[in-house]
Length: 68
Image 1 (spheres, rainbow, N blue to C red):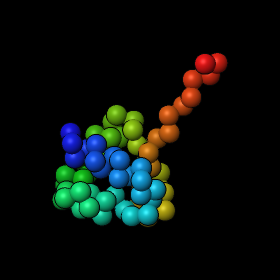
Image 2: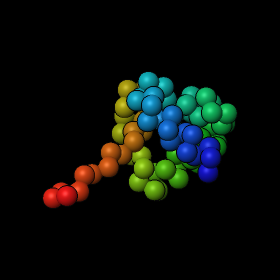
Image 3: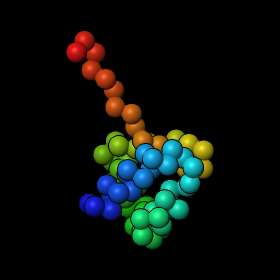
C-alpha cells in the first residue's frame, strides 16, 4: 500500500516526463511490481491509460461538484 501511494504521488509530480516502469524503479520497484500497482490504480479509477509524453498513463482529475 505504501509503495502504491508513493508511486501514485510520483506519477502526479512527474507529469509524463518518464515512462511508468522508470518511475517504479525510482521508488525501488521492479517491472512486475510496477505493473501490479498500475493495474490496481487503473481498477480504482485513479489513473487512466492515455499517452502523456513518455508515460502511457495519467492521473485522473477529480470532477468538481456542480452547484456547491
